[in-house]
Image (tube, rainbow over all chains, first blue to last red; front, side):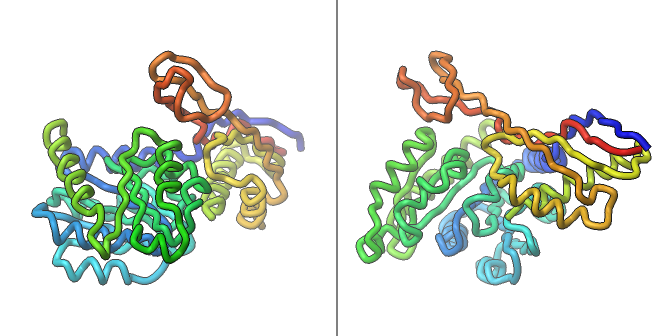
Length: 219
Length: 110
C-alpha cells in the first residue's frame, strides 16, 4: 500500500451553478421575471408576496421554501395563484436543484416569486437562477441586523426595511439600518416599509412594474 | 447550517475520485474556500467527520486554504486587499470571486 495525491480541481458548487444556469434559460425562454425573496423569519416575506399578488394584474406564481410545514403555501394559495411548497427538511436554504424540480409547473406565469427559507446567511451562497434578489428585514430584529449580516445585503438588488411603524416601540433606529444598507450596497434600491400600514408599498409596486417593463424590453 | 450539504458534496466527490483510483483509504482532502463563502471551517470539519463515518474517507484530514476575493473600483480600476464598497475616487467597487469551494487534491492510500 502506498500514498498518492490526486489532482482534482473540482468546484463543489458546480452542480448548483449548472442547475441555476438551466433554470435561468427556462425562465428566459418563457419570459418569466423571477424574484427571490430572502430574509429573516417573520420579516414579512409572505405578506409582501400576498399583497403584491392582490395589487398587480400580472399572472403570478410562487414557490415557498420552508424547513417543514406548508403554512406559507396555504396563505399564498388563498390568493388563487399557482403555488408550490418546497420543504427543505434539514436544509436552511433553497438550492437551484430544488427549484429545477418544480419550474415546469410555472411556465405560463409573468412573475415567479421564490420565497427562500427564513435565514440571513445560508441562501447567500446559492444562486437559484433568479433575476432580482430582494432581502427583507424588519425593525423588530434589532437595528444592527443589517450590519451583522453584510454578505446578504451586498448581493441584494432590493433591500426592504419592514415594520418601520414599530420602530419607536422596539427602540430601533430606522435611519441607522438604512445607512448601514446603503454603505454595504450603494447600488441597491432601499425601501422603508410597513406592510400593515401601507408605508413604502407603492414604491415597491412601482419597482416591480419597472422590472417587468425592463424584462419585457430586454428579455 | 449549510456546512452539512457542503460536507456531503465534498465526501461524494472524494469518494468518486477514490473509487476511480481504487483507493483503500482517503487520508487528506485539500480544499480552497473563498473568503466570502459563508462557511465555518470548524463546522465543516465536524460535519465531514459525521458524514464520512464508515466510508474510506473516515478520519480524513480537511486541509483548508482561504482564497481572496477580487476587489476593484469600477471607475478608476484601483484594487483593494479588503472588501470596500466605495473607492477613494467615489466610484462603486466591484467584488468578484471569493465564493468558491474547490477540491484541489485528494491524498489516498492505494
